[in-house]
Amino acid sequence: MDQNIRNILSQYDLGGSVTTCEAYGNGHINWTYDIKTDNGKRYILQRINTYVFRDPVGLMRNTVLLTDFMRKKVDDPRKVLQLIPTKSGEFYFVNEKDEYWRIFVFVENCICYDKAESLELFRESGRAFGNFQNLLADFPVDSLIETIPDFHNTPERYRAFEEALAADTAKRAGTAKAEIGYVLSQKQFASFLLDKVKDGVIPLRVTHNDTKINNVLFDKDTNEALCIVDLDTTMPGIAAMDFGDCIRYAGNNAAEDEKDLNKVFLRMDLFRAFAEGFCTSCKESLSREELLLCPEASKMITLETGVRFLADYLQGDVYFHIAYPEHNLDRARVQFRLAADMDDKMEAMRDVIISVLDNKDA
Ligand code: ADP
Ligand code: GN1
Ligand code: MG
Image (cartoon, rainbow, N blue to C red; front, side, top):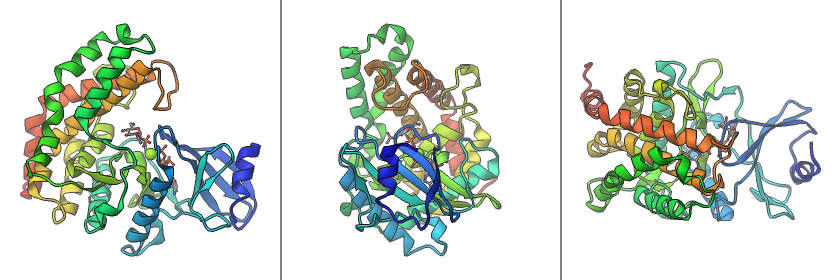
């Protein structure tokens, strides 16, 4: 364990001495560690990525407000993230290098998946995110800050992409001509959902905004979804985009960074399973209009995420953690292949949503 981490841990009373501290999880943004103590306690230590989150104090205020609010509504403490205060009672610690650190209780007996290993598991993730909507349906939206302004504003992501393309800082535009062409060909679609908000067809709600399956913790024995983690981007947004991001990540037949694009396609059996879990659990909190936009939202978030990966590739990988130099380009290619497949399956996705909402089998 390095001295920096030792110093951070010394700010906390963890009810025992720390025996191990290991890098943990597959997140692309924060730095996460699994901490174990000699009296059997386990924690998640995290350093907040302050390049991504420019207002970590506001972010932590959001997390405290959200977790306090949800805790009053659940029956099992494992169902809501629990922050550990420092010895001086703060929910985060800032060291002399201006790094922001925090500690959560490690949710006991949980397991986290990086893909939908079965239809039932994915249906259960749908229920979990649907239930997240229910839990926060009456949360006072105005009390949250926007931790990343314009996070799912797709036209704004296009603007940033075009800026990155014009600057071509990393001199990589020449290696991504086909991908750049695809992005530009889809520009008309980018404002489709925000126009619905502007026209009053759908509302802004408290949404999670990063609904990858690895942001859900399941009970190891029963595979019941226990807890939604990674609340850093929970802020006002479009509910159907939360649905869409789950589909983008785990409804894909392949991994987010698969190199063999023939393996990349939307699995309709997974789409249906997720829709059953999500739409059924939050039918009361969300309107039919919102749920009917889930197919377009699935394509929107897939396209937008691809645009973000490609912009980061053009900028020299300043945002997402990468494992090798073309990682962001590979990720972007997968998103574009998947978005194109979703175009082909738009009608089929819509039929599934309608049949789930109308409780039919087809
Ligand atoms: P990132 O923002 O980098 O994605 P996350 O907050 O999602 O970071 O954490 C990374 C991983 O750590 C999660 O995917 C999950 O597996 C695990 N994790 C996070 N919080 C907890 C917790 N309280 N208990 C157990 N595992 C957790
Ligand atoms: C990041 O932190 P993580 O890995 O859950 C990103 C999401 C992207 C995702 C792509 C704050 O999520 O927006 O969809 O990578 N989070 C942030 O895998 O930018
Ligand atoms: Mg995460």
